[in-house]
Amino acid sequence: MTAKTPEDVLSTIRRGNRFLLTSHANPDGDAIGSELGLARIIRAQGKSAVIWNRDPTPGLYTPLPGSDRIHVGSEPPAGFPDLFDGVIVLECPSPDRTGLEEFLDQLPIINIDHHLGNQHYGQVNWIDSAAPAVGEMVYRLAQGLNFSLDDQTATCLFLTLVTDTGGFRFSNATDAAFESAAQLVREGARPEQVSQWLYESRSLASIRLLAEMLSTLTLHHDGRIASVYITQEMFDRAGATESDSEGLTDYPRSIDGVQAAILLRERAPSLYKASLRSRGEVDVQKVARRHDGGGHRNAAGCEIEGDLDSTLATIVEGLVEVLDEN
Image (cartoon, rainbow, N blue to C red; front, top):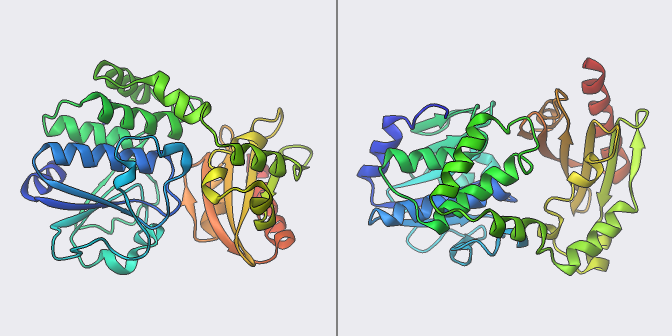
């Protein structure tokens, strides 16, 4: 296991009674699973926990217990900020990644993250870049609070490990990831349920969107880079929303010989979200950070303004540089 939970994190949670939890915009499995797991842990201590995300929960994660209680949107939940003792920000290297940064400074911040570039913006900061997922850190927090997980909480945290390690396929599938996964299963996590949620419960719209996306597949740089994109027209034809595109970046990355992959999603006219994936030592985070994004070595993202062709060319150029460095 990696290092234990710092005492200042534990003491802050022990002292408080009402907490607001949030994570980054366009939440992924680690964000949602960590929030739901931590909320259950806090509530089991006889305290209050409210989750507030700017963006809706992707359809893949709506079966998680408690997902229907998440407050979504740019307007704060009832009683904010007076009814809260602090906000716990999970998996956000900087407050602006939440999309709610204009509100966060109204409360003391507990910053829990595993990104290398975290800005230590909280009154209390717990950053562990060796952690395979923030959900694994939440599990350690539960242990520090002497809390025994129920099966639903364990399952939420198990899901964070599966999604952030790519099903234990990425370089962050460390011994800590496997040890935590085994312990979570002992505490009641249900791997078969998580597998069904992630791999066998896709909406029909998401499959239609996959077909639309794959029709754009292009290889670059002697087949070492693969790109795909999804325009708003493609979302409309598929009857899909942005949440239906969760996990689609793995398809171009899976091609033999491809070392880096790009998925561009049109979010608004002349605004694209770039999701970047890579293998081995290829550090796509370097490219994302040039455009005020971030992430990890093998999984990162950013937003870029411009037309589709110029945006794609910019990202491909950055990835070529990173590949040539290796």
